[in-house]
Length: 244
Ligand SMILES: Nc1ncnc2c1ncn2[C@@H]1O[C@H](COP(=O)(O)OP(=O)(O)OP(=O)(O)O)[C@@H](O)[C@H]1O
Image (cartoon, rainbow, N blue to C red; front, side, top):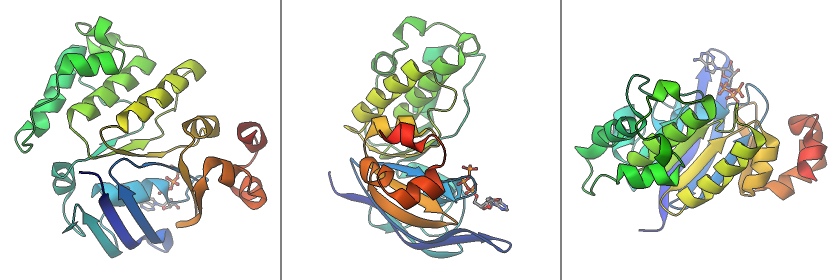
């Protein structure tokens, strides 16, 4: 099943006079890991919105698994395995950790031909086996992030879109997340938009820099971090520390 999953050509979206995303070409294969960085307002969230069907492109084409998706509703993207984890946590607080996973899995079970993942195996994978019977409201912030990622895994993603996944995590938890994301790549492609450059450096993957709606650099994190202009203009203070 390896091969190309998503292809976007000349994707653009303007809001009023602002070109939030301007002419982006993107191809994602089934086990790709890609980080998108850039300053506030660069267009990262809008790009993820376009890839998840939450935002319709003003122009351009989007193909998923060989099927033209341009202008299709978000649920059509979900059905083809595009799963988005938003910044912050979106869990059912009055349900147990395990039941949160089951509900997430049942939500997509009706249109998947493969069996629902075993929630206990997913709990193990995200390190929450010991908290299976806890109410989600009792979990600290970091652990709710694991729960949400577990819920995303229950949705059997082909492409997992992560919106600032390291936000609010301790350095130790961020490293744990790096390891988890690398394991997730065995099952799906992962695209993360992120501001935490130390985290991006640890992921050590293909990294794109967005600025004013365009992808202005593509390369390994090391190549991006070594680019004087990118360091000065886009990475800002702290880049030197993150890069070396
Ligand atoms: N719904 C909207 N209505 C109007 N303008 C918008 C809307 N969504 C985004 N924009 C504008 O589009 C540009 C790109 O925004 P976007 O949120 O995609 O950037 P970003 O790189 O994700 O920023 P941040 O890192 O701060 O989240 C910004 O100028 C933003 O103000």
